[in-house]
Image (tube, rainbow, N blue to C red):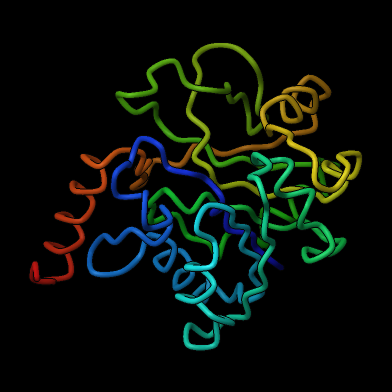
Length: 232
């Protein structure tokens, strides 16, 4: 299967760090945030990757190249301006192909096992679903959550969990979005949730939304401690 890494965000809350460096290239534990994902996807055998970018996107292409040094193949989907999540995915459909694919936000960190994603595709096909979402416990900065979960089905209502930014989608979900159109993901998901077409799971492992400089510093310290990486 293929995977798309979302890397087009401006990272306003990370300024001034993101004034000159795109958010996915900010470092934690001695390597860029997006590289942690690439390496984990490669270890899971998911080696066909698509990366979208907008703000300072040329830096991302220069830093990652064709992906060969990571054991993957990277293709890029430039946006000018950024098209939001669903718009960005729709813009890249020609690179993603006709089969379900994974999408991962590049500004998160998690030990979720990407090797499970092909199994999630099989479950989607068995259930006739258009999406599978990985949900996590609500962090302090997002106490109300996003979606409920009932027997492996994503629903609206309480208690709500937080969408992790890791999901699997059927390309048909985005087929009606004209290429180059701004479109958020949440309304698409809510419409399919109402139809009972979205599966999900509650992941209890490590997950962090790296949305502020303080959280980036916390992750950096944790990874350096875990991997015995000295501060330079």
